[in-house]
Image (tube, rainbow over all chains, first blue to last red; front, side, top):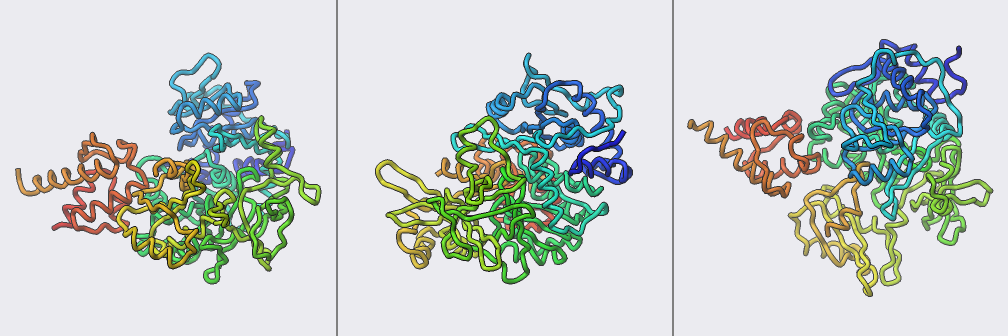
Length: 499
Length: 85
């Protein structure tokens, strides 16, 4: 019996199980697992869940080999996985479970619900009996079936499901390969992201297609210290990280040295050009790449190789570069008219291609707003990101559309104010501008600094010397540490609540 | 009580006051075995603040290597003691 009918990402992982059976597939909590060990766990879980009619399987995010094996098993069986997080509030997990219609939840040690209810079966993958361990002999994959559904924060507070099909995932895989990585089965690659965040998916699935080893980060202890410790001690060659991590490490750059690192990917939020430039001496042999993409267009859809000098940026935020293979982009103004390339004015980035989802999970009205027909007749996803495209075709990220506000009739990009403030602090402190709309007073800007010991008056004077008065925030606050969301991005909504 | 033990107790008292203030949790009671696993609020972000506050209070400077090796409060006390010598 053939192992695979369709070519795709899973096929390569499937092959790696055989070809690299004695290579290490994972390093988790101080222990290596070979491809053979991983495949046995995958087969065991796949055999078990194949016996259920249910298409959608919940998986509790844990730093265990069984968690990763569960994801692979679900994909292998042609089913769809949805990650539930033990740290999420119970109501959120319940909401996701209800929305996705989950009846089966796979977990290792942590249950997301205290007791298994009569309608949800909770299966502990540690308890698999030997009789379940059989070889699955084919991958069951239909292009239109969903591989996973990621629930993101919706503007109404109700989690919004982004279903990514097998076709989306395979289109992403093809495009990602086109970036021309020089990596193979000997590479050691970092997986630092929460499984609820889609960058985690490429961080472990892609290395497994190569026969490389994935190093995950322990939830125990202090995460950013664990990450650098793993990168140094195990001489990792590839790491995708969030810029927030680098910001935390900034005071220690002179002590960090990662000569084995071949690629440093920055992703998940706008990257600061100066910060990356300073980190270069820590990873002198690495190519730095900024990867951008909304969850709706499957993980990443543009790439920019950051040059050692002359990095393209807007207000310090590094350019996001050129579209992936198979991705079409256009910039549109508020009237839905195209913004010419190389124009001064920024437009909303729309993306189209096989990586783009067909629509939100059971939310046609939200899909209708986000997915629209472009002038070429293709369906585009409206990213909500404001960008420009320069004369070389590089996309320059200019900020979120939501971060653009009008004060006294003037259009203001909040990132521009943040840029000026960060300059004042010589990029040593984070700063965000939060717009508030008190009744009857229009938009008021609140500047929040990640520090509590600074001179507000001096800062205010500096801003006044650099920006027109309508851009000067009315209020200045200091917070010792900015809250981050589960995707390691600065949680502006929470900061809004704190001030 | 010998001098070394007195110093440890003083350091622990100082750490308790820092942790309670930074993590805004009055009921924190540290001992040498306490780790980040035991206190929800002790994470990547707050750890930076805690280290900064410790450096100020005890007039010491931690290198990145030091911080990586601080696995529990006992390690922190020892590191501070050694640096104050």
